[in-house]
Structures are given as structure tokens and as C-alpha cells.
Length: 308
Image 1: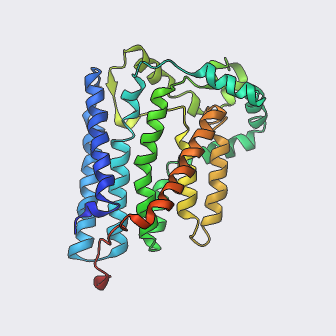
Image 2: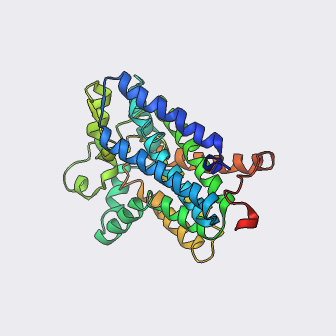
Image 3: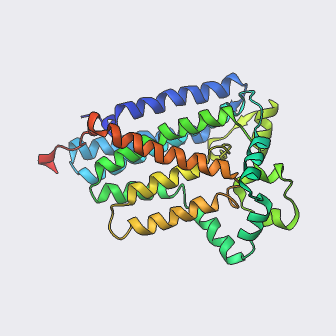
């Protein structure tokens, strides 16, 4: 059985397609791709796939076979679908900051006043920052937990939803790119310093891509350039769902990811619309998966049951 059967050949194919689109798009824009991190990442992917094959066929161990295949998929996801966000900035679509600001006014939300209150306490601010920064590390943690407690099918679903939901996020972002609330609301001074890096660090790359003078792409320095929808919110929904049935971990994971969603305002620098759209993508993807799961073949085991 092939290692590409986990989490599924369709999901691996999706990564391959988005990878070709991502790097082809960068080259079409005249961007030079720094090869070092790309080569290292793909070498690690091959190494983990090799390890998964070893634990599937030579020294059968279901848990290690699943965890190593899942790790390879996670690395491939970051190096392919994640990279697609960069060329998609250069779509020519008008930025929609005014629309998102008008939406907040319609809701009666003063973004500046909201983040001022949320970051007033240094202790709370540090806590929200740590919660926000935990979002991506939670992916390998989820792989380890689900892999070693035998929740193979749930892990396969979790992994397969990552590229699917990010592609949806990227498509919406291409239609409604934005600079984010920090520059749009003119946040500066002491309040600017209190806000987290999420709404600031991507701006140089975003401006360069929009202006057509982004010249070098380094996978190791890639920033999260998507503002609408918030993929941190998508991840929060998916990760909380994935870990929910695991004893002793499910409830803390839910609490942590609620904090992740809250933190996307001051630390991630997101509009309220970004958060609502991200949550909608996350919950809708799970709802669709639940309705179609009876018609989709389960992810095959990497190790034959008799050898487990």
C-alpha cells in the first residue's frame, strides 16, 4: 500500500496542483525563488515518506507509519498550498478595507477602542499573543496526539481539510484583498506597539507584491499575507474539532482555540469580517464533511491489521 493513501491520494494530488500553481505563479511574476529552504523542506518530506514506508512494510508499526506520513503531508501543505497565497496577492483586485470598515461601523464596533481595551493589561496581552502563536504549532501536536491514540480516520479528515479550507480562504482573499485594520485605521504610537505582529509583519511583502516589485521569495521567511478570511480562525475550528474526543486534551484544546479566535483581533490584526468568514469556512467544511462522510471511502490503514 502506498504512503500516499494517507490521508488520501486526492489530498496529495491537491497539494501537487497547488504547488505547481504557487511556484509557477511566482516565476511568472518574475520572482526569484530562494532554493535552500525549498530543497530542505522537500528533502524532509521525502525522508518522512520513506520512514512511513519503512514502518508500513519493513517493520510494521501503525502509529509511527501514520505519524510520519502525516508529518510529510503537513510539510508538503506548508510548502505548496501555503505558498500559493503569495502569487494570489497579485490579482489586480481592489483592496476592500473600506468595505470591512463599513461592516464594523454597521455592527457598532469601534476597532480602535476594542483593541485598546483588549491590550490594556500587559498580562492579558501576553496571554493572547501566546495563544495566537500556538495556532501553527498545534498542527504537529494534533498529528502526534491523534496518531498515537489511534484516531487515524479523524487525523486523515483533519489533514485533508487543511488544503481544502486554505484554498477556499485564498480564493476569497483574491476577491477581497486588504491591508488590514492597523494601517487602515491609522493605528500608531503606543497602541501600535501593544498590538501583535500578525497585522504588521506581512505588510512589506504585501505592498511589494501589490506594487510589482517583490523580487525574492524565501520559504523560511514566508509571512501570512491573507487578511480576509482569517485562516487562524479556520485552524482553530478544525484543531478544536480534531482533538475534541481525546480525553484530557479535548477541553483544554477547545479553550485554547477560543483564545486563538479572540487573539486574532489585536494580535493577528484582523477585521471582525475576517474572523466571521474564517469561522464560517471552518464550521462549513466540517458540516460538509459530516454529510458526505458516508459516501466517501475511509482512509486505508497504512499497516495491515494483522501486523499491528
